[in-house]
Length: 536
Ligand SMILES: O=P(O)(O)OC[C@H]1O[C@](O)(CO)[C@@H](O)[C@@H]1O
Image (cartoon, rainbow, N blue to C red; front, top):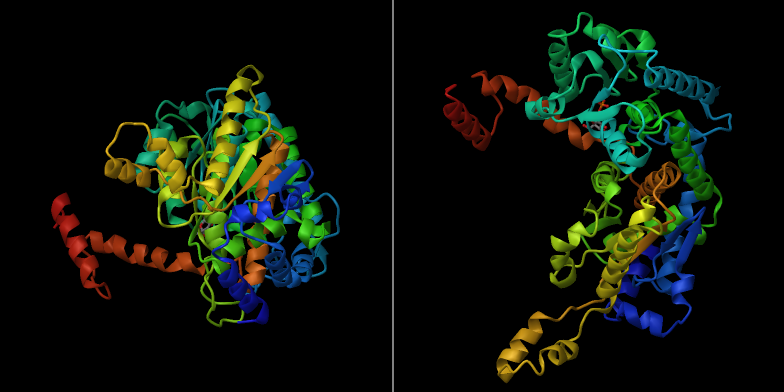
């Protein structure tokens, strides 16, 4: 353990009993001081137990961030276990050169973006059409990073959707394809098979299913397929015309890929100009991340709050709570971004990580979550740091009273988490209800809120393509900073491989194949399922 980590642990031990509210009592300026602004975003971390000493120590942990950050932005192979550069930032960059092995990657990025724009314009105008006429629907088939980004962004940017309707098939469960295709006209549906590797079993299986669905009604189904992949040999083998294949380089990780061709479905839905605004938002965040001093740097501060809560205080999860219904799938998107990136057990050099890796990330939009799981957040025995996101303005001017109600709820929650309700206050609540004393006391105890529960609030002006770009890039850089502080590789995902390998072996076993190497529990489950299915 380095000195800084030890000092942080000691500081936490010494101050852990001090209520967060006391920090406000001792510092009337705290609410103003503990905020970071970046191009219209406003991040308030004052409702955490981080004091000046903790902040200094956390900033010391981040000392290595600037050099590593430059290594990322300038194309060094910082994904050391896969020998790759990490350049999703290049997908939204306008100024180069950005060199990988001495070659500027920007011309190709821009050429691909231009091809995407031309394709999207021609599909949206009807110039490229299906065999039954202008495309009314687009189905993206992909999973993980080849699905979650476009799904999340398409929902978030629904007010800008003026192209074909977007649909997404990800799960290998045939129910997903069946339900999605129901009601679609195969002659007017464009299918995009999105897979970086073009080997992912779920995606390839669904692509075959959809091709069969189309073959029943369309003379030349292949002409209504496009592909997004970095495996151009495989897209060709699948029969997709290279004209409709959009490639990207191996330095774009799946969960960081929404900015490029994986975002094609989104571009078709909202149009190239809005997609450009999304890229511009990401670019603005890149500029801020690269240039702002650490203590005024939004991704750095979001990361330091995360490190404080998880690695220092030991809170096992964090909840992302957008008070913006259109950010419905942001928590799911962040689950992959954060947990696939920072759920690692060894450091870059292969040594055991001597502290917790990234936290469990979960969440749901407010106010819905309030009526579901907030009970535990307020009164459960585990502390869940909450990350609220709220927009000052909604997209529906005629429903502004609802936006104000939404904002009021968001602020009420973070306020209640901070303040809580004491036993004395709960007793006062019960007094005068005519209950016997012991019963009043019992009832009062159920109405106590411990408070002192940390939260942060990110305020955006409004949810737009630009601000969505800022938010996504903010979280990408937060993951990066946390990864640097932990000394892990945030850009590989070996942890998903074993399950994939075993699934391939288990397929034949369900058909009565060889049982070699399977554990007894799995064999018993297979036998039971085969029995239920009548396969045994
Ligand atoms: O785009 P592909 O190659 O189909 O991969 C899909 C997803 O699968 C994963 O490799 C995990 O299994 C993710 O990292 C990725 O986003």
